[in-house]
Image (tube, rainbow, N blue to C red; front, side, top):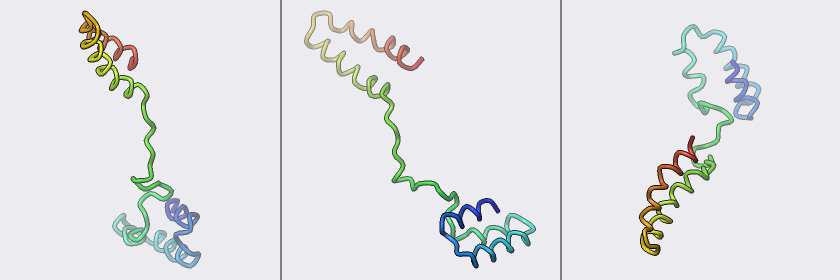
Length: 97
């Protein structure tokens, strides 16, 4: 009933449809009886579509992606620059502890 009320409050049902579906929910005996009531409605009202969801970027992942590039630069440009590769596990531990 709460799901149907949410659908109604979001404007997917008019008052007559809401009344009819509420009566059908009250008369339902099994979950299978409820399926036709919600068949033409979204499963989770208020949820954004998958394409419109913005995922926040994790700055630690960006840093960890850039560190090998910096280490490669040290390897090429600085004598004993290969030692920069030893810092990768340490930085990973510090960033993700």
